[in-house]
Length: 469
Ligand SMILES: Nc1ncnc2c1ncn2[C@@H]1O[C@H](COP(=O)(O)OP(=O)(O)O)[C@@H](O)[C@H]1O
Ligand SMILES: [Mg+2]
Image (tube, rainbow, N blue to C red; front, side, top):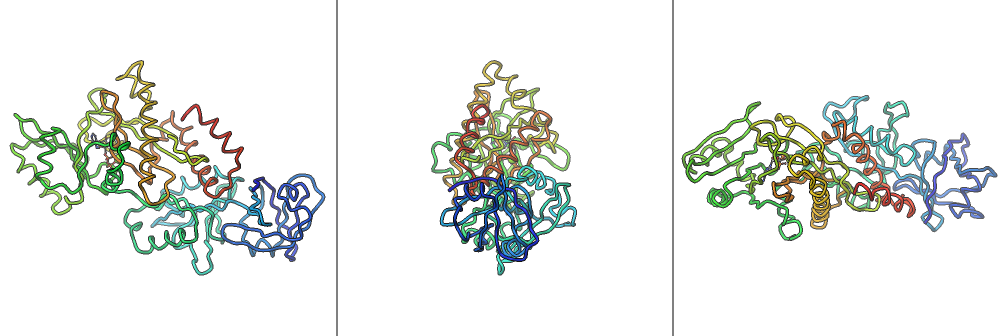
């Protein structure tokens, strides 16, 4: 196997001959060969080859060749010799998303900007495109993808099924539908790597890690669908619990429950744009309130030991660790945001009055000279937790957003893992370069999964990552 780059030219001939410059033929071990199997995504054609005496790596594709293999554009791209006379262009990488209010200029709604950023990151390194489930033609095994011009506008091109799919379907609801399940199965059956599989539920992640001692050490005690007796028992044990909807996000429906033997039971939660604090003289009235507000939905809640987080100005702080798999298939923390809760808020979400800061700003106040060591430890734990989730999960993972708490003793805890993490931490001016690194990791990992990653590339990457890992 050898990987190189070449400049693809679109020629006007109608024959099915592939012309290539002699240096390229030599690098691809095609010197003296009469024909080649040319591959893009899951499409392969056989074509006659001829060499041109021209310096540099050039490949000339006639109209007939590029129409049958559906090469989306001319210009620089990687080319891989797979052995057995097979040469592959690409990789062809699809980013799967969806939007209800689609338009030609905004095909992926609120995600359009993010998808554009990934495509730009991979320019000349891969054929990247966005698509939605309805753009796939399973009979023909093609996708009508959205490609980006250098000027930033969209154009459509029909291409073969890609080498890798990066899943950013935005809705939990559609993602569990039969049609999306069969879509995923169809990619997997064709051995097309597909990551991430789907959104996580909190209860599923806790269950996944239930037999993994390395991870359990960092999980607050959690019980899914608890009976009231169980909640009471845990309140007596910990005095402080979080009660969260298993498929929730953005802090919706979360309660912070506390118990003081003398003063009774307290529930704190968000109602509209206000923080509410209620006191109950006995446990029964607390449970009655939860039932009145949620009824049978309470079975889809998890109850979790509360962690006494570090604080600034009496407001708790937690962290988002944005984790990626890199070009060597290893987990790395690409960016870390610290979030300070708004006053009286149960969660640290910015939408609920929270504010974003760097991890250094957050940790210096509590740990002083030890702050660096605490952060390094938390990074190691985040890598360990990502590995644990991955080894216990039946599907492919390449990106995770971990909600991490650090307590006053410097212990590290995970509250939840997100499989489609948002990118709001990268809006912080000090985290912009981490945001770009995050995009590069997505690309690198796609190159890795499609095998378009040379040995020397992955080595130099691991060296440059040494400092921030
Ligand atoms: N067990 C816990 N102890 C202390 N704080 C918690 C606990 N669980 C959640 N929190 C706080 O609530 C926030 C939201 O919880 P999380 O589990 O991430 O739910 P969501 O899906 O709504 O983001 C966390 O980021 C953290 O600040
Ligand atoms: Mg969260």
